[in-house]
Length: 92
Length: 410
Image (tube, rainbow over all chains, first blue to last red; front, side, top):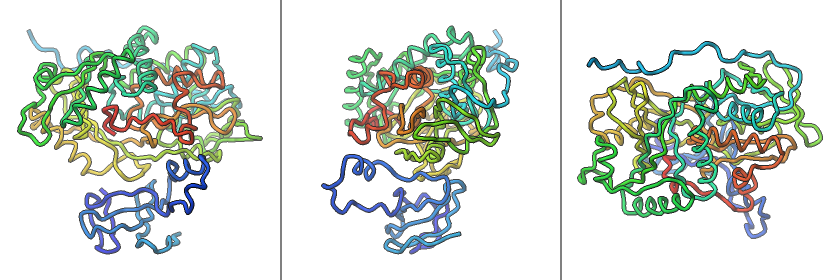
């Protein structure tokens, strides 16, 4: 089980959280202008790296706030957590 | 009469069935991934299409990934026509596979029950039974008392949190011994000239002028006329080296077995709502699978709370399991697609073919996908049963949405 450091509450067990997938996926500014390929890309395609991944978590059984994390999907190590609206931290 | 010890009817472990090859400079076809799908594809390429200058390149050992980690359930009771087509084709091949491969697979058609726990479950299940029948797939709707007749150890008492209101039953479904399936395909493919290169990880796809020309591996470059990906959870990683993005997310999927027990469980029981599926292996272990871990990961292990929830569900359905001990838990990495259906077919790179997105349910399809994917590779054109599962369905919108509808514990 992951130990996830909520930026509001500190480290808590994974079971308290809800996963939200890839972070920083913005809703298209003008959806009606998108081609089918662009819409498919927005709707269905997400990064799936074996390595550092910027992802969303919600501390659903705690403060109930969404936040972002940088986690290595090859090791599950969490490099950083940051609040919504903050830029993605630079990690080595 | 003295009872036979568990496993006494199983065959002895065989001698080595194929020789580990050194990579040659070039092959007509390189298959990336030596799991069930890769081995079956190699076999049907040689058997059905006469393409024998084939190498299966595997980063570990043959059938050591998800082929060694699945819960061996075989069924074809999917809702949609497209799914019924390929899964039922697979099931028909399973029914003749021991003879075809000349190898014991311990294929046991003991049926599968997909339990319904709510009125909506019941409606969806009855609909699926009718859809299955229209597609020539055997299916029945059973009420709770009939469920108890098929599997006496299921708790059908109405006073539990998720009472069993009934189930769909596919009598031709069952289980097989996953290792034997891999060995059977490998042996038969080796006899036709296919080579297996183990401990050889593909680190990159070589593309020139929009056409694949080979693979880079940890044992050097290998030229190939065509490359077929059967890399399951690592498909995104391999495809990215050719600049191809796929709508896949890799997740851990966990399963576990109990200690060896006397035969108590005569069939396969799946419950989508409470997320557990259970059968009893020939040797006597109860084999139970869970749902995926929510977070993406390439780690072949998952979180304990998933196992805990799965056990809670299993105990409510099967109170008799309360004293059984867990022997072993494990995880594999599965590639999940947006519509819970596989992606099979051509790619934007000429000569490069993908077979991925099987998520939690690829084992049952092994013979069918091997058959259809080999055809796709051999003819550079999707097999009719594979055609609906093309990559471009995410652009056209022609999804094959099997989330929940298939009674799949995704």
